[in-house]
Image (tube, rainbow, N blue to C red; front, side):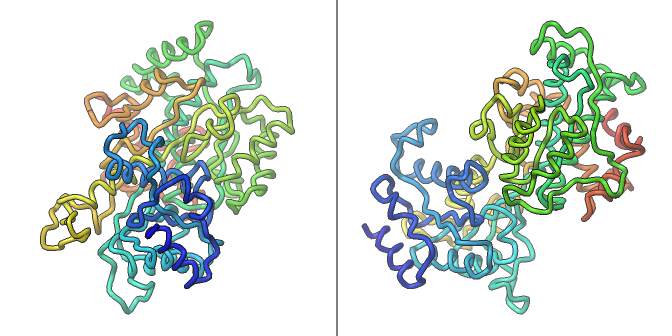
Length: 467
């Protein structure tokens, strides 16, 4: 009752927009220490917010209900607390942070880069923050440049080009296993909500590059190490469809070196993805990869309206569980549940000087292994990116594409390739700067020699990594 009462007090003081726990109070016991502040969406969105809440709740269950097996954590009545801001406005986000603080929050989990303009307010209130899909650095307390920088944030980031690449390879395999469905050619396409090189465009880049890497593997013996993978790919496709005897190239319906090509719907709101989906379908796209939140539904609706045989690649979370396995081939994943739980395990440990008897942190006991005031990414934690297992891309195919474990000796050829591509995208190779730019068309011009061929240094670096 005390935990619930604290929420009522906060809501009364702030005249808050959401008495979210009232309806759930009889169903769950909420931990008032750990709060998820959504990106203004609902916490049960089957996407970013729900994944963050699941990761936080999974950790809460591990601490509060120790008899429950990790695999059965959803049977527990314990959950992390949450607040759903009424809108994306700074005032609504600030209300959310303050509500959680008054209700006893020690740790705030804020999913999505939309919190970027308000995170300093959250850092000023809570003991620590987990910023999902963002950086812990250069955040001023209270969003005031005159105030000190926050030192209590864990930044969680996902090099989504990895998941986009794995999804692109999965798309190429699936299309080749289903050649008869697409007599006009195997064609892929992608679009985003808005251009964001760290959270949207990198997904798209990895997906597009996958097609060109795949085509090089199956048709260009000038790169012998890449060409060796061809036989394994054919064998994998034949597991999916034994009738297949040869591999086909995958075409891109969009021109990667055309300055005025359509790549973005300019919104993440549902309904705004219809026009660009229609355009891609008019070009006979076989698979569309929308990186635009709920606009995945727009794409599916337009596929049905146009009576197209096209399929969809989901984004961020396991989208087949929302839209069905008949339309979703696989999803490019950010393993938000895993990364959120692991961040909480780190924060609430001796590594960060956590004192369980007083529920406080002793800065004098912090070790170098503490994640607070650092950025943690999928480069250090490769299991934080991947693709969804579906009936189209089964467990065997997923394992062929990507090593889902921390055992690096099990890395696939594509795991080795993506390590090179991560450098190409965000860090650069040798004296050559990274290709990623603020504008996606510039990123593509930095990547491609022509519309169907990657720049030579990229292929050379991949070839060398496979030796």
